[in-house]
Amino acid sequence: MSEPGSPVLASRTRSKAWAAYTADPLSVIGLVIVVAIVALAIFAPFVTPYPDHVGPTGDFAAMNAAPSADFWFGTDVIGRDLFTRIIYGYRLSLIMAIVVLAIATPIGVIVGLVAGYKGGWTDYVLMRITDVFLAVPPLVLAMAIMGFLEPTLMNGMLAITAMWWPWYARLIYNVTRAEAQEGYVLAAETVGASTAHILFREILPNCWPSILTKMTLDIGFVILMASSLSFLGLGVQPPTPDLGSMVADGAKYMPDAWWLTIYPALAILLIVLGFNLVGDGLREAFEAES
Image 1 (cartoon, helix red, strand yellow):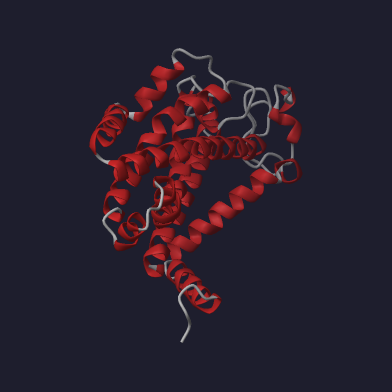
Image 2: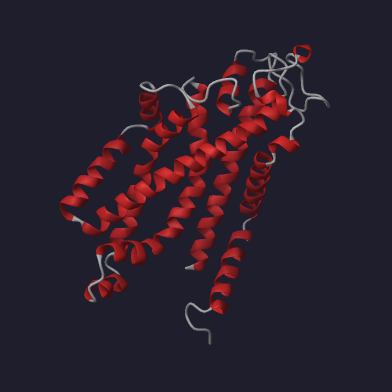
C-alpha cells in the first residue's frame, strides 16, 4: 500500500484529476481555446501578417477593406489589418489580466486569511472594509477611479485591481473560517505554532484549489472588465490595439463596415468563454482530487 504523500499516490491523484478534467468535452475545448490564444499572443510578431499595423501607420489604399484572402478580418478606417490588431489585443489583455490578478490575489488572500482566523475586531474591521468595496458595482467603481486618473494601461490595471481583491478576501475568509476548526489547525495551536505558520503553512495550502479555480475564471472577467473600460474611453488609448476600443470605434461604422465591431467582439467572447470552460474543468478536477 502506498504511503500518504508518496510519489505513487501523488501520481494516482494527478491521473484521477486529469481524468475528471478531460471527462467533460467542454473543458477540453476551453483548454484548446486558451492554449491557442496564449500561443498566438506570445508569438504575435511571427504569426500575424502585418505586424507593422499595430501602431498608427496603416495602408490608406486598403481603407475599410472587407474580409478577404489578403485581410482575413478586413481592415479599419486607416487600412490596418484587423486580424493582426486583434492578436496584439489578446497579448495586451492577457498581460493586464495577469498583472491585475498577481496584485489583487495576494492582497485578498491575506485579508481573508487574517480575518477568518483571528476573528473578533480584526474580522469585523477587515470584512466591513471588504463589504464596502463589494457593495459598489465593479464597473462603477472602476469608472469612478479612472475618472481621477489618466486613461493609461497602468492606471487601468490599478483601477481593476482596486475592485478585484475583495472577492478573494470574501472567498478565502469563508474557507479559512471552516478550516480553522479542523484538527490539524488545533494540533498546530496546541504545539505552539506561530500565527504565520498556521496561516501560510497549514490553512493556505488547503485554499489553493479555490484560489486557482477562481483565478482561472477571473482572467476572462478581468479581460471583459478592461474591455468595458476601453469601450467607454477610460482604458487603453489609441493607437495601442485594444479589443474594447476596437469594438467602440467600429460601432460608428455599423452596419456597413460590420467587421470592425463583430470580429473584436467575437474575440472577447472567445477568450472569456475559453477561460470559463477551463475554470469549470479545474473545479471538477479539484473535487475529484480531494
